[in-house]
Amino acid sequence: MSFGDEIRSREELAAFVRGLQQEYARRGQEWENASLESFLGALAAWIDDADGVYRNFGKDLPPGGDWTFFARSLQAATVYE
Image 1 (cartoon, rainbow, N blue to C red):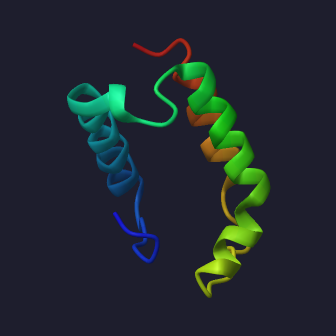
Image 2 (image 1 turned 90 degrees about the vertical axis):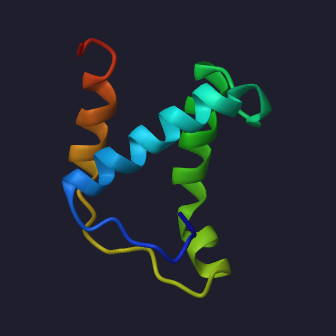
């Protein structure tokens, strides 16, 4: 997925996350943030800096994103089987 690609549905988001999981299984040791601790830290930092990241790619941060859904998804993953 490149920066310009868009996820348009919950199903596409789930498929994208599964793709990340498969990539981690294949090459996770090569990731910059290979531990859960560093991954979550990088995720928080990226979210904090997202305005600038989007601006660097000539895009606007989507207004009114469903941040609650994303937060609930992350929280649920701590206990969901």
